[in-house]
Structure formats: structure tokens, C-alpha cells
Length: 318
Image (cartoon, rainbow, N blue to C red; front, top):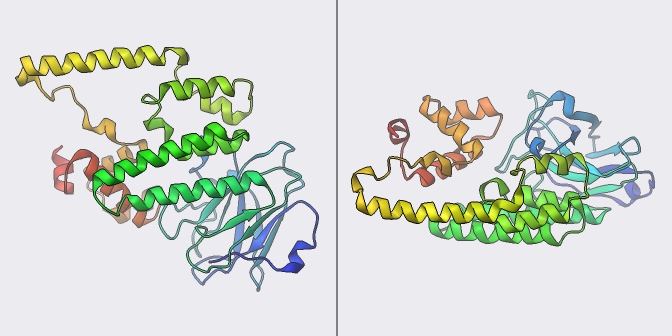
């Protein structure tokens, strides 16, 4: 599938979200627009979230009117579904990832454009607003992160991931657009790194303390109520870490009894790890969570690396 635009489609000056989809026979000729109320809902899907649908004509053109959207810019998702699949189906990761995110309001004109026919939304560019240009640039950074997971050693992948997460935090810190800033942080998987970068997040919350959108309200709930104490938490944690090393040297028989290797896993990886321990195959896990098999394999590979195991049997015995 590729996206492109002809000159005639630019004649309409009404607020619209439009483009041209060149879908192959696997995909239904319908494009869906969903409202994303908070960033925690980016990868959830239901029929209630879909607010509009547009047919793709014989030449591949589609168009949504955007004049009925709220006045303030909010986050939306555009997606397509495979034939015979439910409209509310989401594929996360892999070449068949079937969605992309945009920022829009009732005055927005967003144009999706891509001259290449490879993949689904991976090659799409957005025009019509600076925030959406930034969104696609963030997506490209994240795509590079995903590619490093399977090119080179595990250590190299970890170094590259940390560097790119730092780049995304820089984008979030320097962006003057609140939704673009939050988008970059969520793509950086901040849940796993905010204790390490406590000062950054303390300053970040202070910077946007006057922003009262639902997106920031939800974001703030994911942090301790007293962010100024992050520094103390780190000092206490470091002290206990050093004490733990000292105690382990004195009492070697107590080593590893209090460590929990599962803490290294993300929320999604823990869910998939539980499914593995239940004896489910990659195909069954894919169907359970409505994600592609390639995405499941990616999660399984990350789980094995983080837990230092090599097979499902070792996962069962862990």
C-alpha cells in the first residue's frame, strides 16, 4: 500500500483529512478514523473509538471531513482492516502494521502522501501542519530503534535503544507543541526509564504544569504524587544497592533470593510471558491480543534476552 495525491484533490480548501491508498487484495477498501482520548489508549481498539469511516474509490482516493472535530487539537488514529477481519482490529509492529497517528482539529487539513508502494503506513509522509511533520519524524526514529533489535549483538541493541530514547526525550523537551512532546515521550517507553532520569521528568512536569488537557492529566497520574522526591528515591536506592552488594559478599547463600527477573519485562512482555508459560503458541498469542505473529516473535525474542533463557521449556521452569 502506498499513499499519493493528485493535483485535483488539492482544490478543496475545506478542512479535510485525505489521501490516496493503493491497497492490495488483502485489505478492505475502507479507511477508519478513531479518536484517541489519552496516550495510554494509543494501542487499544474498540468500535466505540471509531468516529468516521471513508470508502476508498476505484482510484484509491479517500477523504474525511474534519470540520466536525473539536476545536482544540487532539490525537487521532487512521487505520485499515484486512478483508473479513473486524473493523476494530489493530496490528502492532511488523510490515503489516495497519495504522498511523495524526494530530487534528476542526480546522485541520491533513494530507497523507507516499510515492512508494512498499509496506502499509511505514513510508507515509504527512503535510498540512507542522505537528504532523514532527509526528512522522518521531515515528522514523522509533522504526530505527526496532531495526536495531535484530541487527548486531544484544549489547549493541541496548546501547542504540538507550541513545534513541535519549533522542526522543530531547525531542519532547524541545518541542513547543504539547501533543508532539507527549507523543515523543510515549514512544520512548518512558515507563521503563523515568526512575533513572528522574530529574528530567521532574523538570518536564514543572514545565507543562499549566497544561490541563486530558492527555497531560492522564500522563501525570503515571508518576508519584511528589516528583520532587525522585532524587531522594535514587539516593536511597543507590544506598540499598551498595548495601546489597556488601551483604551478598558476606552472605553468599542468600544471593538471588530477592531478585525478580520479571521486573525487566514491559507490561506487554509480561502478558506474553504468562501466555508462554500457559503453553500457548505464537499463533494463539497473536489471535488473543490481535497483533501480528512477527510482533509476537519480536516480544518473545526480547523476553528470552531479558530473562537469559533460550526456549519455552526454560520459561516454564523459571
